[in-house]
Each structure stands twice: as structure tokens, then as C-alpha cells.
Image 1: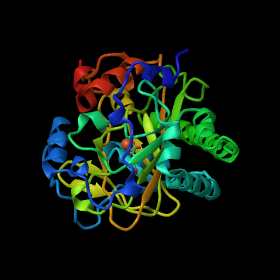
Image 2 (image 1 turned 135 degrees about the vertical axis):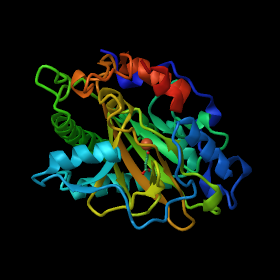
Image 3 (image 1 turned 90 degrees about the vertical axis):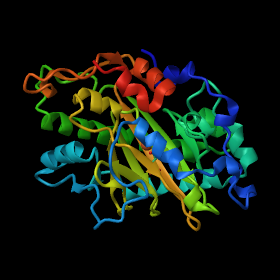
Image 4 (image 1 turned 180 degrees about the vertical axis):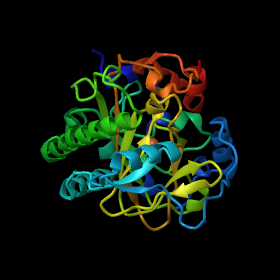
Length: 358
Ligand SMILES: O=C(O)CCC(=O)C(=O)O
Ligand SMILES: [Fe+2]
């Protein structure tokens, strides 16, 4: 059975799209990181989204629903949020606050290290894990105001390069976090399948198995001297089935909603953000949007987030599940393996879904 890291092995990137800026050494926004608003807008249009204001949403506080997992109507509420928004915030999710805080603290320590130390664990050109820029970097004309650290399973290989004598705590926390996130992601997947009326025969047999794929992305968005001209993370959809995000208490994450434009997802103490990724969009026959999102930066607060990407095994064949192809409508996507889709996405980003349209 191939692993997620192997799925990325042949998708090599040039080093300048891997090595982040040394943010501690710059006092002003370099031209390489100065975005025109149209850079972002052009890209959004390539996702075929129409309407909405691009300059940010200042409406009457409309945002993604905040759902309590212990609510007796949680299945319905989660399903409707997936349909209407492709995202929601989740309270009472069962992950201990202590673990989340400790993971955030480890991320802060990691990103506070001098650049020379962080680049010891630089992601290799054909690699999937370690320190580096966002993988979507090559698709945009400017660099993002962001640095990341990707973990798939045990981070010890990368962590030892940074801390040769003391990476045990970092590794233990990241492994525990992935273990607990996997359980939550499975629970959400079952809930969403129930909402979609997926029958026992159609139930996908990998949920709950050891073969499902998971990865953690630690993100840091340093304070920025010219936040209005910079971009934390450019608009993208996640390649996952679903993504669970913890954000530090600093605003920045926004989702694109047709008719509204960019809507902020304000940090909600004790809530995790759940996003629908491309694979659930395919499985649900586009009944769920895969939510387009981006991150803005600010002058005074460094922002951190921890994203957990959950998906089927890389050899699994994804296609619209018959129960979602309702009312004699047709399947909108052809079948693809997860690995094949990762490859198509790595080369086409926002154009990937159109390439597998049936
Ligand atoms: O920083 C965030 O809130 C979102 C991160 C994200 O979208 C990602 O890592 O794919
Ligand atoms: Fe994302």
C-alpha cells in the first residue's frame, strides 16, 4: 500500500518555491511578496467562482455555522453546513484543550528558531514533509507571507535535524495530535455519510482503517510591515476529504462564499474549523462545495494554525457515491485514485476538478 509521502515523491518543486523568506531579517515588504489585488482575483476566477466582492466582506456578521458536536441535531446541522458553506466551526469536539495548546506552543517554538536552524529540516524538492513554503507557491506570481512545517506520521526524521538532542516532546505531541484528529475525522466522516443517506453496502470500507491518510501542517504567518499588499496563504481548496484546522486567536482565515465574497472565519475559543476538501466534493457529486479559502496577515500579531488533512488511502478509487447521484442526475466526475488526483492537483491546482469532470 503506497503512502501519502510516496504520492508526493515525483512532484518535484524548485528550491525557490520551498525556501521561505527569512522574515526576521526584512524591515519592509520585498517586491517578490507584494501582491496586486488582481493577482488574487485572477486566481479566484480560475476556480470558476462568480460574483461577490473581492475586497473582503463587511456584512452583518454572517459566517460559517458554529456547531456543537453534542447537539442532538448535530448530523443535520453538520450536513447542512457542508451543503451551504462547505465549512463550519465545531465545539465540544472531544480533543482536549490542553493538547491543542501544547501543539500550538510547539509550533510557536519551532517557527521562533533562527532560519539557519529551521532550514536544516527543509522539505526536499521531491519530498512531502519538513520546513518550507506552501506547496501551492508555484501557481502564484508572488510569494506568500507564510512558512510551514509538514508532518506525515512520525516527525522524528525532520525534528532530529532541528533538535539533535531533544525532539521527543515535539514528536510525542504531534503523534498524539494526529491520533486524536484521526478519530475525530472518522467520526465526522460517518456523520456526513449518514446525512448523505449512504447505505451500508455503499459504506466505504476504509474509514476507521489504518490505511486512511492523515497529515499535519503547522502554519506561521509572521507580522507583516505592509499587510494590505501581502498574502498569508493564497486562495486554494484542500485536496483532502476534509480538513480540521486549529487557528490561534488571531483573525486571518477567510472563506469565499458566492454572492458574499470573502467571509472571515473568526477564531472561536475552543472551536475547530472543519473544511470540505476536493475529495468529499467528488464523493458527494458536487453536492458539497470544496470551500475556497485564503489567509490574510496583519502588522502586529503573528498568526499560527494547525491543519489536519484527512483522506482515504492513496490507492483508493474516488468517485461520486451512487446515493449522492440523486434524481437520475449523472455522475459529474470520473473515477480517480487518490494518488492520481494528488498528481493532477499538483500540476493544475484550481483546474484539477475540471480535468476529472465526466
Ligand atoms: O491558516 C489557516 O487558518 C488555514 C491553513 C490552510 O488553509 C491550509 O494549511 O491548507
Ligand atoms: Fe487550506
